[in-house]
Image (cartoon, rainbow, N blue to C red; front, side, top):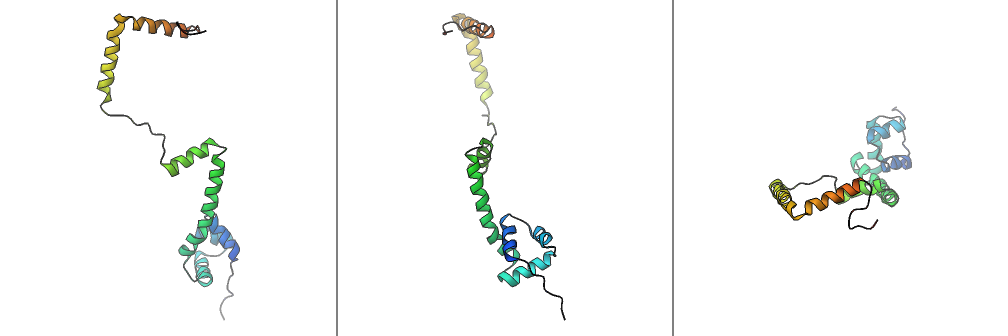
Length: 140
């Protein structure tokens, strides 16, 4: 005579799959071995654990996604997270190679315009702002 079969509650098993529990976590929850979970799944669903898990966990992912999108309306951090993961957005600052030479030319060109009084006007504006005053030609 064989050992009494361990029964796993189907509804609980499906809930655990929905929250993305692994086979090891499901086995731990029911206090059985992973092999027992695998055999029970084959008897109950006529398919392997991986196939059943994929089907039963899909609803949990959809629920999680729905919750995340709802949170994104209130919390900017969640909106940023979703943008990075679903829209390919990133915090990476992109630089253009070879631009250093052009920048040096622009700076040299601006320095050459000091004679036009532009530099003196910029210095006056910077000094006024540093002192907390309104810049020349700007309303107070």
